[in-house]
Length: 160
Image 1 (spheres, helix red, strand yellow):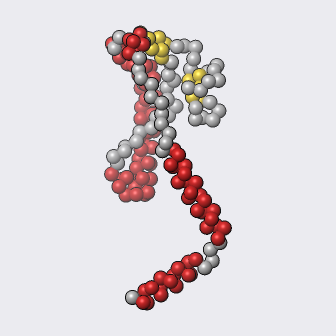
Image 2 (cartoon, one colour):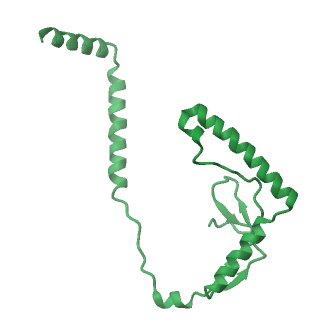
Image 3 (cartoon, rainbow, N blue to C red):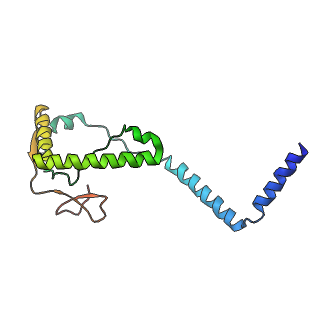
């Protein structure tokens, strides 16, 4: 028992011998700041606004913007058995999915399938069946802003 205590003391001395005290204080300060940030962010709440049921009955008109067809189509098999084999299996599954994506994109191109118009028509039909008046906005199109993270309306500087 006495030898194990001596070994632990020896290990502690070897580990702590070359440590910079300034580095230790910076580490503790970083940990303290992270803990404070977590505690403060836990106090944040979102404002809840109750739905005005009288106003909800008056909202019966929906405006849809035209949708451009997707630039690239991605096919991904989330349940691929190759994913069970770690990074190499993920690479195999990704290569397989890329091949399927290319095949699907070529099929859409050769058969001239217009997904955007079909989806827009289906959404409009369902909204009309639900009692909404559907209006198509033709003077605005979605576009990606310079930072590519926020969507903006063309001709407008306000982000959505």
